[in-house]
Image (cartoon, rainbow, N blue to C red; front, side, top):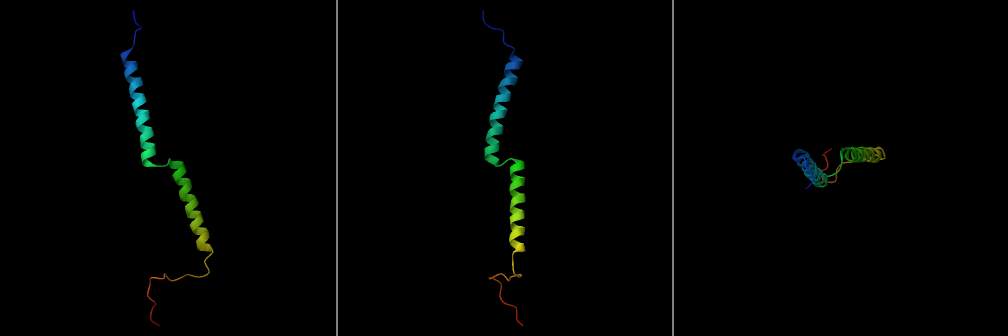
Length: 69
């Protein structure tokens, strides 16, 4: 005679595996984890602030026409 199998436990175990697989696919599909993304954004903001602080003067964008004096 075979082993007794609880079908509810089997179903729940199967569903957990499919949810884990879907979660892994979504992580790849939708990018980085939140802590990694926030760390990257903070680093980028710090870098931009550092570059702005090193400017010698407020420059006019090269595409803007000169203002008449």
